[in-house]
Image 1: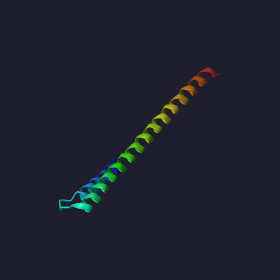
Image 2: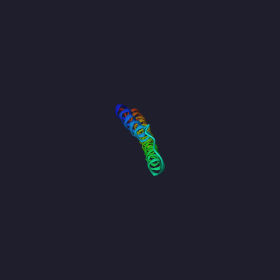
Image 3: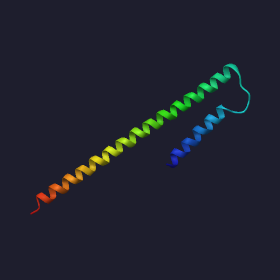
Length: 80
C-alpha cells in the first residue's frame, strides 16, 4: 500500500505541475491539457490492471480452499 500512496503522490505532483499557476494559452495550454488527460488515462489503466490482479488472486485463493476441502474429505474417507 505504501508504494501505491507514493505513486499517487507522484501522479498528483505531475498533474499539479501540468496545471501550474503560470498563465498558459494556445498550443502550450492544449499540450498541457493533453498531458493531464493522458496521465489520467494511464492512472485508470493501472487501476484496472490492479483490480484484475486482485480478482485473479481471489480466484486462486478460492481454488486453494476447494483443494484443501477435497483433501480433507479424501483424508477422512481413507483413514485406516
